[in-house]
Length: 100
Image (tube, rainbow, N blue to C red):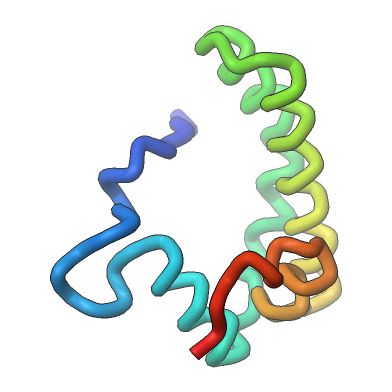
């Protein structure tokens, strides 16, 4: 069973060790040229299930639409072999992350 997790405990925003928080992990992936995992493309096939689950759990239509947009954009980038940095910069998200 696929379960969405976004509670901040798996990858907290702050932690005592380096490269543990969300921003640090993403920054490291961007700076290292890490490609988006190819299996991301397969996640799109699960969209109907994900959407039902999000509705059942009370997410708004706007939240669901943004999630779908982000997922499909990520899957398209993975299919092209883009790195996280390429995807983040193309999507406009990359400008929110400080690259060290």
